[in-house]
Image (cartoon, rainbow, N blue to C red):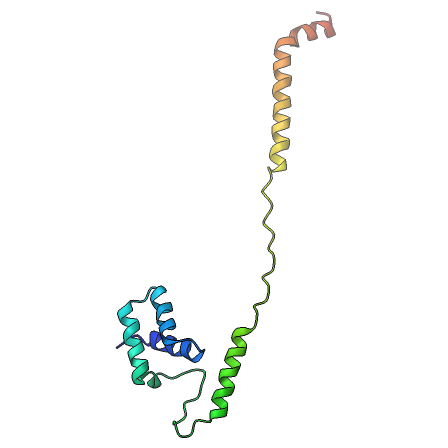
Length: 134
C-alpha cells in the first residue's frame, strides 16, 4: 500500500486544481520513488483516497454533497492561490567586526614603552651624565 502522505499529498494537489500528472511529477522530483507515487495515484483513481480523512472538506455521501458549497470552496482556494505574497523586508548585513579598542590602546602603550627602553639603552648613560654632572 502506498504511503498515506503521498495519497493525501496527491489528493490535496488535485483539490487545489493541479493535474494528477503534475502532482506526480512534483513528488518524483522531490525525491519520492516513481513506483510509490504511481501506486498512490492508482489508489486515488480507484477511490481508496476517500478512506483517508480530509482535513479541509467534510465527507458527504455522494447524493447529499451540496454542489454550491464545493464550488465555493474551489473558488476560495483559487482566490487564495492568486493573492500576491507580501514583500520580504530588507535585512541589512551586519557590519564587519572592528579591531577591539582596548587591544589597540594596549599595543600603542606597549610600543611606546619599547621605544623608550631602546632609546634609554643607547642614550641613557650620556643623558644621566649631563643631568647629574657625572
